[in-house]
Image 1 (tube, rainbow, N blue to C red):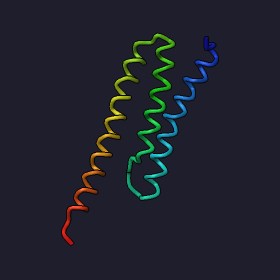
Image 2: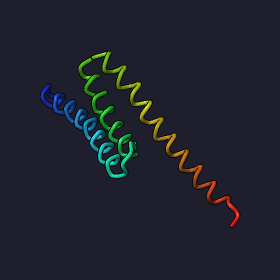
Image 3: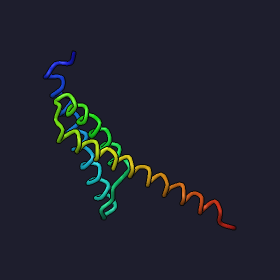
Image 4: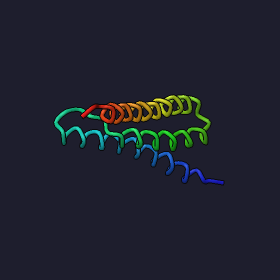
Length: 98
């Protein structure tokens, strides 16, 4: 059985992942001088969401469970769209006649 203090630490770790995603996004944007959302932003989003969802399930908190579940779907979907876009670019480059 996991203690209450351990679950609080788990919840805080999830919040830290959410904080880190904004740090990653901010640094990446500053480097290029425009707003960008790097892939790492979505990975930190997923990590934070999974950890906080676990915490919310332990707390039996339907508000957090619903919020983190829907957010998790959106974060994964964004990674799928990024992957699809990259495959399309690779396919377009590979199909050009030189």
